[in-house]
Image (cartoon, rainbow, N blue to C red; front, side, top):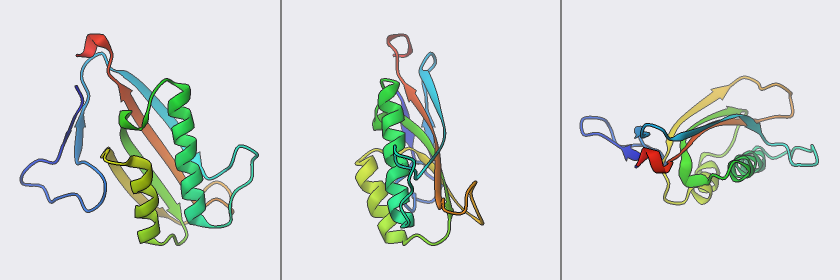
Length: 133
Protein backbone atom coordinates (compact mmCIF):
# COMPACT_ATOMS: atom_id res chain seq x y z
CA UNK A 1 0.00 0.00 0.00
CA UNK A 2 1.25 3.51 -0.80
CA UNK A 3 2.12 5.44 2.32
CA UNK A 4 1.73 9.22 2.37
CA UNK A 5 3.67 10.72 5.27
CA UNK A 6 4.49 13.97 7.01
CA UNK A 7 7.25 12.98 9.43
CA UNK A 8 7.76 14.47 12.86
CA UNK A 9 10.57 16.99 12.89
CA UNK A 10 9.52 18.50 9.54
CA UNK A 11 7.15 21.48 9.37
CA UNK A 12 3.52 20.75 8.65
CA UNK A 13 2.65 21.04 4.96
CA UNK A 14 1.66 24.60 4.09
CA UNK A 15 -0.86 23.46 1.48
CA UNK A 16 -2.60 20.30 0.19
CA UNK A 17 0.43 18.01 -0.12
CA UNK A 18 2.45 15.36 1.72
CA UNK A 19 6.18 15.55 2.37
CA UNK A 20 6.74 12.01 1.14
CA UNK A 21 5.08 9.08 -0.57
CA UNK A 22 6.44 5.56 -0.35
CA UNK A 23 5.42 3.42 -3.32
CA UNK A 24 5.57 -0.37 -2.91
CA UNK A 25 7.72 -2.58 -5.10
CA UNK A 26 6.12 -3.76 -8.35
CA UNK A 27 3.70 -0.82 -8.53
CA UNK A 28 2.81 0.35 -12.02
CA UNK A 29 4.26 3.83 -12.70
CA UNK A 30 2.96 6.51 -15.06
CA UNK A 31 4.92 9.66 -15.95
CA UNK A 32 2.96 12.55 -17.43
CA UNK A 33 4.60 15.23 -19.53
CA UNK A 34 3.88 18.78 -18.53
CA UNK A 35 0.17 19.37 -19.04
CA UNK A 36 -0.68 22.89 -20.13
CA UNK A 37 -3.90 24.87 -20.04
CA UNK A 38 -4.96 24.00 -23.59
CA UNK A 39 -8.46 22.71 -24.15
CA UNK A 40 -9.02 19.71 -26.46
CA UNK A 41 -9.76 22.15 -29.31
CA UNK A 42 -6.29 23.74 -28.87
CA UNK A 43 -7.48 27.02 -27.35
CA UNK A 44 -6.16 28.45 -24.09
CA UNK A 45 -8.26 30.51 -21.70
CA UNK A 46 -6.89 34.00 -21.11
CA UNK A 47 -7.40 33.67 -17.34
CA UNK A 48 -4.41 31.90 -15.70
CA UNK A 49 -6.64 30.32 -13.02
CA UNK A 50 -8.84 28.87 -15.74
CA UNK A 51 -5.70 27.52 -17.47
CA UNK A 52 -4.85 25.87 -14.14
CA UNK A 53 -8.25 24.14 -14.14
CA UNK A 54 -7.78 23.00 -17.76
CA UNK A 55 -4.27 21.63 -17.04
CA UNK A 56 -5.65 19.64 -14.08
CA UNK A 57 -8.49 18.32 -16.27
CA UNK A 58 -5.86 17.21 -18.79
CA UNK A 59 -4.07 15.33 -16.00
CA UNK A 60 -7.34 13.64 -15.03
CA UNK A 61 -7.97 12.58 -18.65
CA UNK A 62 -4.44 11.19 -18.95
CA UNK A 63 -4.87 9.21 -15.73
CA UNK A 64 -8.22 7.83 -16.88
CA UNK A 65 -6.73 6.82 -20.24
CA UNK A 66 -4.15 4.76 -18.32
CA UNK A 67 -6.73 3.17 -16.01
CA UNK A 68 -5.66 5.36 -13.08
CA UNK A 69 -7.32 7.95 -10.89
CA UNK A 70 -6.48 11.05 -8.85
CA UNK A 71 -5.71 8.86 -5.80
CA UNK A 72 -2.83 7.32 -7.77
CA UNK A 73 -0.98 10.65 -8.07
CA UNK A 74 2.24 10.64 -6.06
CA UNK A 75 3.92 13.86 -7.30
CA UNK A 76 2.88 17.08 -9.00
CA UNK A 77 5.24 19.83 -10.16
CA UNK A 78 3.40 23.05 -10.93
CA UNK A 79 4.98 25.80 -13.03
CA UNK A 80 3.31 29.22 -13.01
CA UNK A 81 4.23 32.09 -15.31
CA UNK A 82 2.42 35.23 -14.30
CA UNK A 83 0.04 36.04 -11.51
CA UNK A 84 -2.56 33.57 -10.31
CA UNK A 85 -4.52 34.39 -7.18
CA UNK A 86 -3.20 32.02 -4.49
CA UNK A 87 -6.61 31.53 -2.85
CA UNK A 88 -8.22 30.65 -6.18
CA UNK A 89 -5.33 28.31 -7.01
CA UNK A 90 -5.76 26.51 -3.67
CA UNK A 91 -9.51 26.26 -4.20
CA UNK A 92 -9.11 24.77 -7.69
CA UNK A 93 -6.43 22.35 -6.51
CA UNK A 94 -8.49 21.35 -3.47
CA UNK A 95 -11.50 20.57 -5.65
CA UNK A 96 -9.29 18.48 -7.95
CA UNK A 97 -7.48 16.53 -5.20
CA UNK A 98 -10.27 16.17 -2.63
CA UNK A 99 -8.68 14.51 0.42
CA UNK A 100 -5.73 13.16 -1.58
CA UNK A 101 -2.32 14.66 -0.70
CA UNK A 102 0.46 13.81 -3.18
CA UNK A 103 3.93 15.32 -2.96
CA UNK A 104 4.04 18.67 -4.67
CA UNK A 105 6.42 21.39 -5.86
CA UNK A 106 5.31 24.86 -6.98
CA UNK A 107 7.63 26.99 -9.10
CA UNK A 108 7.11 30.53 -10.36
CA UNK A 109 8.92 30.91 -13.68
CA UNK A 110 9.43 33.82 -16.04
CA UNK A 111 7.84 32.11 -19.05
CA UNK A 112 6.63 28.83 -20.53
CA UNK A 113 6.92 27.50 -24.11
CA UNK A 114 4.46 30.04 -25.56
CA UNK A 115 3.59 33.54 -24.28
CA UNK A 116 -0.12 32.72 -23.87
CA UNK A 117 0.62 29.77 -21.57
CA UNK A 118 0.65 30.56 -17.87
CA UNK A 119 0.43 27.06 -16.30
CA UNK A 120 2.19 23.74 -16.81
CA UNK A 121 1.92 20.74 -14.48
CA UNK A 122 3.84 17.50 -14.72
CA UNK A 123 2.84 14.49 -12.70
CA UNK A 124 3.85 11.04 -11.54
CA UNK A 125 1.31 8.40 -10.64
CA UNK A 126 1.66 4.88 -9.31
CA UNK A 127 -0.98 2.17 -9.22
CA UNK A 128 -0.63 -0.75 -6.88
CA UNK A 129 -0.75 -4.16 -8.51
CA UNK A 130 -1.65 -7.44 -6.79
CA UNK A 131 2.10 -8.21 -6.67
CA UNK A 132 2.82 -4.94 -4.82
CA UNK A 133 0.46 -5.64 -1.95
